Amino acid sequence: MKITDYISKMATSGRRATRLSCRRNMALRTLPRAVGMAVVVLFVLVSLPSCTRDTENVSSGLDDYYYIERMKKLRLSPAYTGTGYRWTMKTASGRDSLVSTEREYIFLARDEGTYELTFTLDDGGRGYTQSFPVMVVHEGVEYSPYTASVYEYRPAPGQFVNTMPYYEEGDNEETMRQKAEDDLVNDVMITLGAYGGYVTFAFDHTVVNVPGEYDFYLKGNSFYSDIPAYAERRGGSSEPGIVMVAFDRNMNGVPDDDEWYELAGSEYYKDATLKDYSITYSRPDDHTPVADQTGVLTDTLYIPWTDSRGNSGHIYQNMYHTQSYYPEWLSDDELSFTGTLLPQNGVDESGFGSYYVLYSYPWGYADNHPNDSIALNSFDIDWAVDRNGNPVSLPGVDFIRVYTGVNQYCGWLGETSTEIARAQDLHVDVEQAAAASLSASARKGE
Image (cartoon, one colour):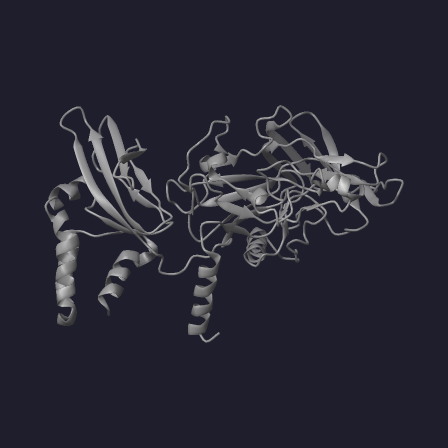
């Protein structure tokens, strides 16, 4: 094994941060004599400086240095407690920049290199200070820039439900989650149904929040009208979905309820946007369908709903989609959703219900602009706010949730329902990932 391979293995074992201590470095002496000189040089340059504090560092809970793959989280948890904590990182200019005042700090970096950190404890006495480097290395297996997994798929009723993805008898929540995952990974559209329906997904790494840059892109099926007067106002078919993000701060690998933050789009602070809005849909009961005068809507009493504002209505069934609109794999007779409600964006431009135009919001929503409008379909983690609308600072996100943000019905077009395909991390090089994938396939003989 090459010395570089040995160090790489030590650095990326288990795809977790590997803590290296002086005692562990002593094991390098067992390497073959052919690489002995290289090992000695490495030991002198890297290991010896930390040996002077080895005993104290073990008790402090912090090591002398760390290796971590880029875009992976490293939890730094000192054993000491005090009245105040400071974590600083040395900038390119040599200045110490404050990164946290919490006892624990989660380090996360997009770029490879060496990062100099300093932890300072105030305990009312002499305190404690420790500086150490974090070496960020390239991942052992190249990251995909695209959606890698789906954690939950729970659409509201809608005309494309049970077809995008396709429901088959015997499917349950797990098999439909898997189908949604297969579709998103392969860039196939899925529906979220009417207001509130959602999907939760993730990449194979943490999406890093890079200041001043968009962080990820979401693909939908929105389009502008082919009538210039409407297209100029960005009208056509926009079915905006609200985007939420979660940072796995406790590193348990699942999106916990208290970790979610909404990305505040262009409509978030406007009076017409409702917060803490709730809606409940009921499974269709046995009743005589009531069609509209045109016959396009075959049942205007199909799926009833009530909301937290005292309103009620129905999801209509139309002649174009005759399957069940209620998620067939769910046993619940009622489905409830809570979130932010955007103002209705559909306008009956015909005046008598034959031509609806759904106008795009300026920015900050999924399935809101055509896919070739890259910036308008991209998202900045710095838009994150808590449930009171206060901005929050997140180093990155591990989970993304999209839910249909509008409750409206637009004639023969039906209910407004967000549809999405795969997402993309804008900080992972697409060409590099593709080349690595081709190389891996070639090695496997594919």
